[in-house]
Amino acid sequence: MLMRTDPFRELDRLTQQVLGTATGTWSRPTAMPMDAYRAGDEFVVAFDLPGVSPDAIDLDVERNVLTVRAERRPTVSGEQVEMQVAERPLGVFSRQLFLGESLDTEHIQAAYEAGVLTLRIPVAEQAKPRKIAIAGADEEPRQINA
Image 1: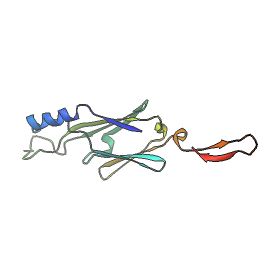
Image 2: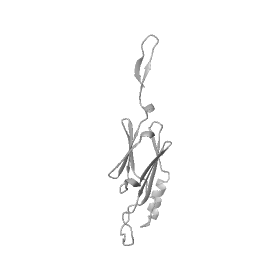
Image 3: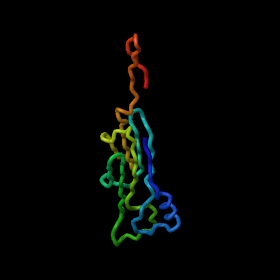
Image 4: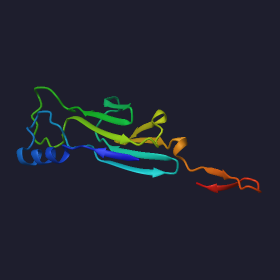
C-alpha cells in the first residue's frame, strides 16, 4: 500500500555527523519522522513537524506520489541576537510517499495539531473486501467472502 523513499537520508545523516552544520546557516535537516498504519477503511500517516507553522506546510499529490514539504524558519533574527547554541535544524523538510492504487488519493484529509501533521487516506472502494455471488446449476445464488 505504501512505500517510503529517501535514498539520500543515510548520506545526509553521515555528512551532518562528520561535517556538522554551520551555526546560523540553513541546512537540509534529516527527514521528518513518521508513523503509518491502517485503521479500518483508512490509512493514517503522522509526521512530526515541531516548530513548523501550519502555513509553512505544503502537500501535493501527483499521480500516486504524495509530497510533504515543510519549512522551519528562524524564530529569532536580526543583528542584536548573539546565538549561543543552535542545534535545531532550519530549512526545508521534504518527504515523498508512493501510495498504492488501493488508496483513494482524491479524498485525503489533513490535520495539524501540536506539531504533528496527520493525513487520513481512505482505502479505495475497489480495494475493499466485497461479497461475490456464486450460482450453481440448480440453486439460487449464495454469498461468499472474497
